[in-house]
Length: 195
Image (cartoon, rainbow, N blue to C red; front, side):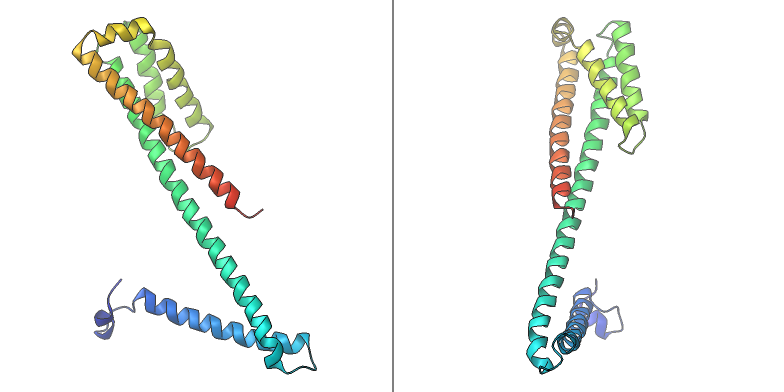
């Protein structure tokens, strides 16, 4: 967006100026349509008498539609943001799981199960669909199976294990929060969508 001086020097017209002109043109067209519609609705009455009421109704309808469209747009932007945040948190959880699997502090079978589940999560399609959901569920189940109380106590006995467990716990907590925020955004968007 350029300023008014840039416009005077031959630059592009500022967006707020073009929106003002567009709004004025729309208001003019609506008022002409209101007068014509008023004359059509009540043929024996002066057009100015019915035109004002019709103009008012048309302006209220236009405002409501504009408000609703802006609200739905804001909700979809919010939804996109929460989805991106959820995706980032899921990737971070999978990376923390790979770190845990590569520490060498767990037995070989457990490390292999965790590494395979994390790889499946990282290689899942970027779109959030059934394949992605299945991969994330598999990773969650693998973590629940691998991190038994005995395995956690073994990991906490070393500094490296404590560090990796702390990162994994943080990543898992952030995934839960991101899912909640995303689910709230989906609920709000569905509630606001026209039926």
